[in-house]
Image (cartoon, rainbow, N blue to C red; front, side, top):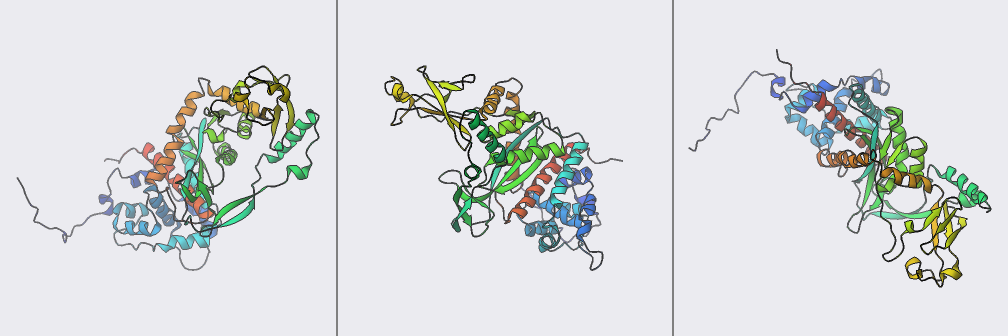
Length: 452
């Protein structure tokens, strides 16, 4: 039977407490029970003057950002609009029905005047991580590393071309020493320092809107200015470390800093799982020499169809040479300044070889096989990939770090950013992942409302 509700009670007056309007299992109650935000006073004490007008409570400012990033609100302006009408948010901030909510520009002004050149957001991130560790929620035995691109607040058509020097990799000095040692061991002259240190230039596109972003090309349809958020997570999905770079910085350059952050904060992991982008000689060497197992995937050979694959050329470690499928020896020729040894076949024999068409398209009928001076570390990682204890570690990657990025983009507004500049993006990264860690910790430690 159709019925109509004719009684309008919009003007009804009732005596009620704000606490009664917030559901007993609302997320803000769980967060409030999980952490005492008073530690923020100690972090920001030196950023405020001892005299002058009273400031907005810094805990209120930080809680506002946690509302924004926990609930995926797009901006501080929109967050303040929500606080005006959302009783749960007012309860979380400690406001009553009629307390005046700060203007949306308040946080921006405080960021510029107080927080901009400090590590306060990083300290907040690690304080939440420390509390989670004290509750035995974190295990750093296996960590999972990856990165995701966040679209910058910049028009991809507004840029200027610029010639810059290529970034020097952290391991470059060690690599140069070993290259020269390898050349000397093979009777070659070492490279002079000026040749090894000859910094190459490259042309890049620099945004005129946000110069600190990087031009990122994924495919023909995905070309944009972006930032890369690099993160390390543990088995339960807690984010242990965060680094932010321009979007054109390769993932592999950030593994070492992330692992070092994890070691410093929660201890050395037994294994690190990462995708194929991290399967490089430098990374596998770094992990293995530090007693960490690299859990990396199988990588398909990039040889043209119809040609011999590289694994069909067998390396002889004792005689330092390669054997081709026809049984001929490819002898050492030189070591390049990039760290690759070159092994070359005898041209006069290859010219009449029946397998020439499957071996090389070289005009002089000579096959060249390259091998990095740290290649044995990549081969060791490849052997470990088949181990029964390592396979499940890599398989867990899609349930940890990939899920972290998926949640960050779908639920916490990390698909694109409205902020500009590396410092502000670092703040956004720290607060986003701190909010995600806090949300997870609050949910797992929630014991429900106390009943009398």
